[in-house]
Length: 582
Picture 1 (cartoon, rainbow, N blue to C red):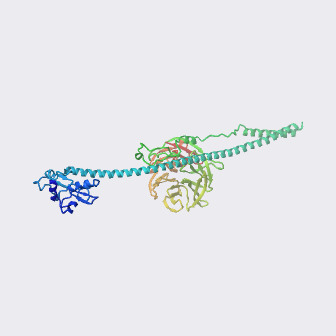
Picture 2 (picture 1 turned 90 degrees about the horizontal axis):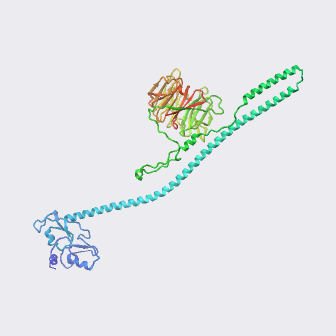
């Protein structure tokens, strides 16, 4: 009690005093604060308070706030009471620093006296723990949100699975419809052939029956002639000899003919379908790194196989040749194929000038459909997936047009026309631009028919300086064959000459085309060759085909990007030459 009384009279801190003692007229330093009583208490009153209110929580002496930690008044580091002792201790009860002698004396009854270094580390540790707790709480919230997102994603995945299964079945149904259409068209073709052959057989039967009747009648005439009548005998004999000659001629013409129809399946259909693993590609929207997979899930390839383009300076060589007859029933003349282009699906469009027809071929070069263009069709180029543009030029009738042909359900039909004021021969397309040649000039139009301007012109005595044209895939180069100067002229998209190439294997150049890698192919009519040129149009890389490949006056060229083949037509020939390249 003496020690407590001695403390009661001392003023340790002029800050906060014990509320209970102050009511009695004493100024005793408060060491704790009760937030429930809203009062400060000294050490003696704290003991009594604890006995009366054991459930009350008390804290340091800063109005209910947690202790601030050791504070050195005025920045002092030495004890004023004990001759300059270092202030190395901290009393949490009094929220004050002191020296070791003060800790053993005045604060010997205080329960929470510690070295200042330990208190600082404790404060820092509490701050670190609080920060960690905040980080963990935030991460926990994010993980919870991620879990919710994954639950939603699971539902979305189920929905997408159902949708894809439905699309796969629709694709299968579409394939079934395509096969059904092919079957129907094949049977229809069979029906036509059957009727034609049947009609011919019936015609032969009628001819044979008439001839048989005539021979029997002649035989009766021989049997009933009067004996001894020399004139009648000679007449009947002459008629009989004529009948015999006619019958022998008929037999020689009709005997040993085979009228059996045969079917040769197109094995390319089966080979193509058998080579597929799936009928479409299933795309996975997240990366392997994010999902933790070692590689993206590859479920298959698209129905149309894609080949990577060869390097620009790759020299192509012919692996093997095919000849495909493109004449159809109703053609009145030998085919003269002056234009050729490929649709994105691999089908081929050819311009048969001599028969006035545009013909649609499939990827095995069978004629699927054709339509008539009566006025001198010249060239064709692909505009969209289902539309081509054809130049029509009849100077005698003053007809100069670009006719647009639509393709739908393997049928061809005229959709619109653009009338021109100049001759037109070659045609090429890039983006929204049509490039049209007119023997000595190159013109540009939009696909809607708006005239853009004359890009290039070169006149000569024979006026065949701008014949056939092709455009690079990026549209930066336009390749023009100049018949008069035996050259290939390369222009930029504004019509400025970039290069001019002449070569001994390029005489009277005609058709020109561009491969997917940028390689350029040019045909020479008089040299009976096809040469390959670099994309700059500056040098020949080599001669691709010539006499050994059976070329005779090559005309239109087209590069088949689906099967990597060069298609060439020839002057007055029913056959297309297809050179498969490597």
